[in-house]
Length: 52
Image 1 (cartoon, rainbow, N blue to C red):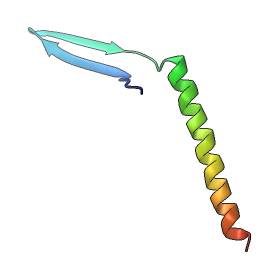
Image 2 (image 1 turned 135 degrees about the horizontal axis):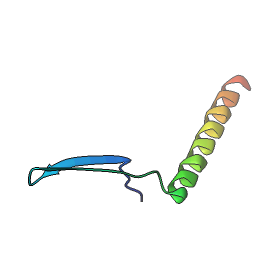
Image 3 (image 1 turned 90 degrees about the vertical axis):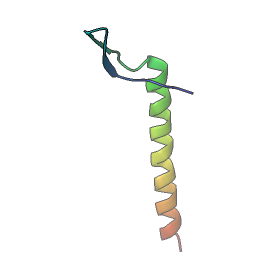
Image 4 (image 1 turned 180 degrees about the vertical axis):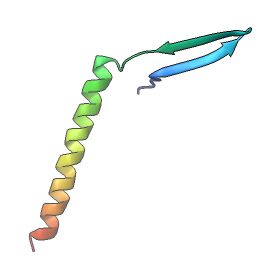
């Protein structure tokens, strides 16, 4: 399970804080795998509809 905030800012005790962080490499890779699998599933569903 992943939880990631690319940017976060808040005020505390009259001071402003701001943080930013890129996606960790393992999360990028996981999202890439999901993206590829999702495209493959869409293609398979479209092909199944035209195979009649």
